[in-house]
Amino acid sequence: MNCQLSRIGWLLLFPRLKSAARRLALAGCLLLPTGCAIPVLNASGSGDTNTLALLLQQGHDANEAFPLIGTRPLMVAAVNGHLGVVQALLDAGADANAADWTGWTALHAGALNGDPAIVSLLLTRGAIPSQPRWFLRSPASIAEMLGHKDIIPLLKNAAALSPAPSRSEQQGHTP
Image 1 (spheres, rainbow, N blue to C red):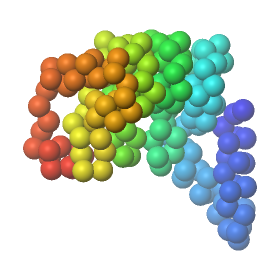
Image 2 (image 1 turned 30 degrees about the horizontal axis):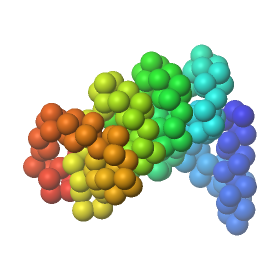
Image 3 (image 1 turned 120 degrees about the vertical axis):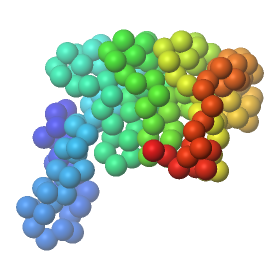
Image 4 (image 1 turned 180 degrees about the vertical axis):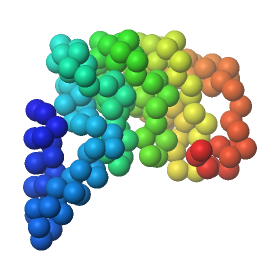
């Protein structure tokens, strides 16, 4: 699947727009600012390390994000428990602290999945547990809520060692 096919897919989602030019402009606005992340997200979600490696060799970026929402391949791989893909993405330069528009990170996804190997890998590669906000739990509280006892100490220890949040972060503002 290439970016051109993805643009056509977006056009199919907006059939009521009057002209093909407006549909193409809308698709361009949605896809071009962040690149065509769909193939990388698909490979990450399915755990297909070989396809992911091929896509990265063809010029895709490990930090590509789904348009508007900001979901990244590292988040998708972590929530699905694909340790090999998480490792490959981090080796390819994926940002362990990249967040979507809500503040959700790969560490949140790893806490949701409950896989100690993924959480440990993310922490050793620089992931910093975020503080809870009024709309988003911290990774440690997600693990506690779901009963993932193996990763709760890892996340709490990492949170204790992480830098204190800035005043704007404490108030719920994101820079």
